Image (cartoon, rainbow, N blue to C red):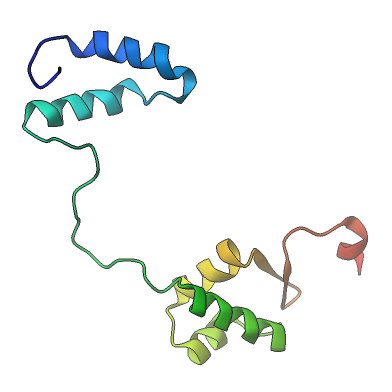
Length: 120
């Protein structure tokens, strides 16, 4: 309806908010979509972008880092980087985001610890 200029975009946005409530997209996002439709696009998905895709955080790389840490939890990110051939940022992302680990007293341990576990 926006592409054909049948109904104003604010009216459509109000109906969207009524239908979806708090889960509706922001007006700015909706305005961007309506602009795209007026320009001839038919979908709201992002277009392909140039650049390097994130492919290093694969399940086998995560498992590789996990098994190395289980064998020696005193390793640094640089040492893990040498052993795996992965970039520093990738190793760090795997440790923090995927394995939920952080370095404490030169040893990787789970982030969620009880007070008694911390004192140990």
